[in-house]
Length: 445
Image 1 (spheres, rainbow, N blue to C red):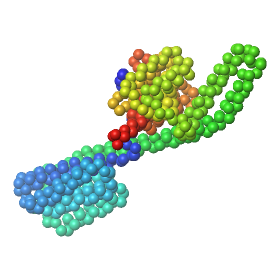
Image 2 (cartoon, rainbow, N blue to C red):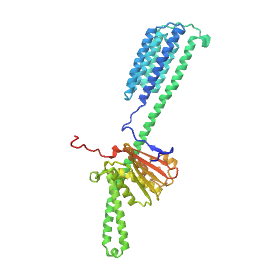
Image 3 (cartoon, rainbow, N blue to C red):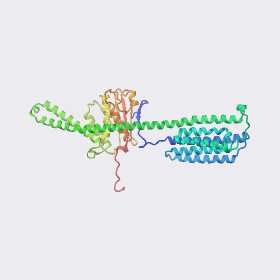
Image 4 (tube, rainbow, N blue to C red):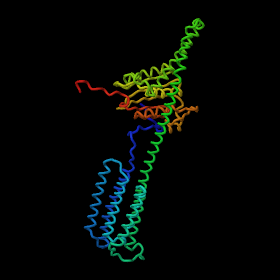
């Protein structure tokens, strides 16, 4: 089976029946990574300050706080691996724990005289990006109170007041490291978090678009069902009139007229069948019309009926489905496949090919034509309503219905142009959506 070319466009099948916002999980993952970086950074800083700069620090207490931070991060990692959605409250608590751990370390290492006190700004900015308004405002208040508490109760670092030495001053060096650390972490993690939020917004926009399309389908279905009901009476009247004409002497004496009346009755019967199919698709009389069959028989019968009712010159049908499976004849699936075939026939009146294949648990229906192919803009908007290259009002609804029916069944539709001319449309449907589950035998129960 040919694979799509690079210009192929497909409509993906939904992976889950309900939307799950994964941005919270991704943001929690960013916080966990940031916390590991903080642990490593604190270990390096404590060692450099205590042993390198000979500034005495309470190593036991500071490493105990680091151990608590590591334990909390492991607990956060286990929570993240559950895959459940992360709430605003959980992110808020996580940032509060980070603020508390930072405050404890600063209290033991100089309080507000420690140049790393400006790491509070990192927590505030992360809260502004991640949290709801009330949570981020609360975080500002908490960090401000922590800063004030450090100024009141902590013991200053034993550092010389040599700011005039520039980069030779240990305090200025600490401020430079703190600034570079803040800037680098904000650049990396805020960029990632904004990317997560953009992905969430894109998913929400896609869901809104899908809801609008499904509402459009409902309106079309109601309109088609109403029109089918209205057409029932005039079609029945025409059937009675044509039946009377067949028995009138004025027509029985002219075989040519009788033949034309017969053709009119055939086309009228086809119109009544189409109307019945519309009502069936709308859910009316489904119990009476649904017939148990097999996948192969259903597709063979559908293909034969389509071939007999369309002016197709050359139609190639290749059914390679293999082991047949039971299914219920579904007019919606039938109409979907016929729409694909009708579009191909309109683009290529002299040659159409349909291939049926099975790919694991997927039913693959591939329709190929030798027409002009899809315009690039059409491929980019495959399945959008009223996107048609035919230039007539109301065009483009055929593929729109095909894409939405396939998506409703959990399948997908892909289209691409052939290098030798023409187009290929491939419909993939999960077998679980179309086949009947076989009941176990009495011996197996």
